[in-house]
Each structure stands twice: as structure tokens, then as C-alpha cells.
Amino acid sequence: MREYSVPYALQPGEGAWNRPGPVVSMGYRLPDVADGPKDKLTLRGVDLTDVVSAKLSLSGRYAYFSDKVRLFAFKYRLNGKQWHDRPLNEGELSVLTDPHTQGQIMQVIDVPIDDLVQGDNTLEFVSVMPARAIPPQSRTSI
Image (cartoon, rainbow, N blue to C red):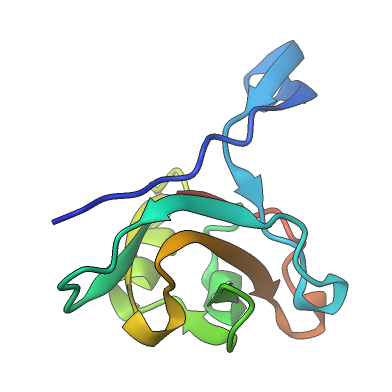
């Protein structure tokens, strides 16, 4: 098994839900599909020798814990190839709609091996929210 990762976003900001003043966001915010991808993340030095499967492992923070989160989905693509839709699955939805959740979940996504290339690979995300029902506040780190 091989693993590749992208660096934390490390975006400076002001104020968080629990503290005033300077803060640093470690995750990447997913822009709305209408706005197009914002960040092109790079997975460096990918070795495809004898690869039989590939997965993305994500840590996501979702800002809404109500049934509105059921409207949310995201799209991802590797190396500028085809966009893949990724709605939240039933397990993820059960956690995110629980009134005791903090809105953070881990997600593992199977990706097509054909989307990968030997060497550096790029990864892009956008969020899909019908009629912008949920403001684009989801963040995900890889």
C-alpha cells in the first residue's frame, strides 16, 4: 500500500466560532460548482506500479447538521479528467443529521485508476448545492 497527501491549506483568517483574533484554516473550502474549482491540489510522485485500486481519504467538516445537508454533494476530478459526483452516503448522512454531531466526518472514496497518472497528480473539488440551499461552508482536507 502506498499513500500520498497534499499539504494543509494554512490559510490565515480572523476569528473562529470559539476564539477571536488570528486563526489558521488547515482545510480547503469547496467552492460552488457554478464558481468552478478554486484550488488545484497536487499529489506528488504517485507510483502506479502494480496498482489495482485507489482511494481518496478525506476529513470533512460540514457546517449544517440538519436535513438540509441531504442536498449537499461534491464533485471531484483527477488530472483534469472527468468530474465524478459524490453525494453523501447514508452512513455519512446519519452522522451529519444527528443533533449531537460536530459536523466532522471521515470519508473514503474509490477512484478510477484510469484517472491517475505516473508522477504528480492534480485533484480538484467543487460543491453541489441545489439553488444554493446551503451556503458553501464545507471544508475538506486531504
